[in-house]
Length: 94
Image (cartoon, rainbow, N blue to C red; front, side, top):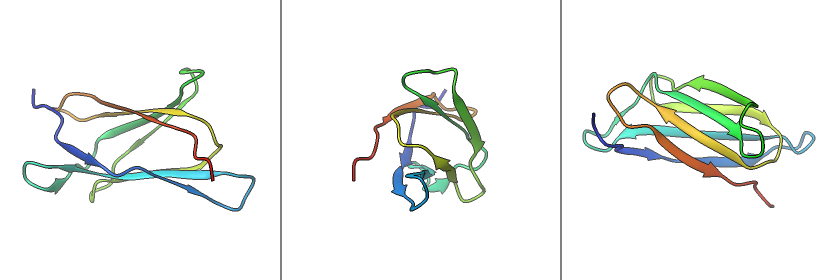
């Protein structure tokens, strides 16, 4: 299994509605600089991992979680042939 060679750009953007935010990013294989389409991206609350949402990265490697209330999260990315990637996404303080 290949080691993680992903460049993950994770952005937290505040929107004007009830402090909801978006968490989005783009996945690449750094060996060949190609986007990772079809990766499973899961976002779960640090305080309660039973509360989670999942999406699949698009053909260009992009993913997005919309209307996320401010909190701290655990981001997990899986893709066949790669090791699992994990990252904490802390609450945005603006």
